[in-house]
Length: 48
Image (cartoon, rainbow, N blue to C red; front, side, top):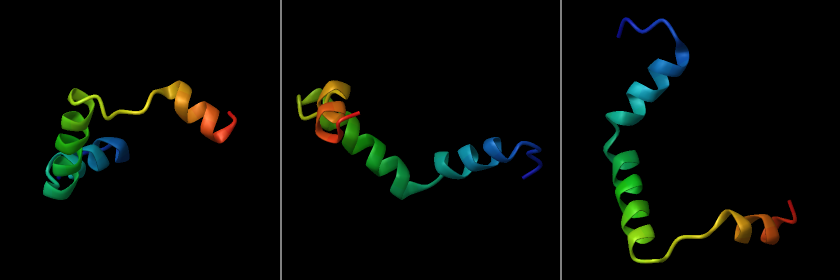
């Protein structure tokens, strides 16, 4: 691809992966519908 930085390469792969893009779209939809989980809930659940 001509990308020197491995992080850029990985990001480019994700941005063109239909399965990844679908998961992102679903997560955004869930958040809009109030189905998200707050960072505080995650910290409490995992005692972080």
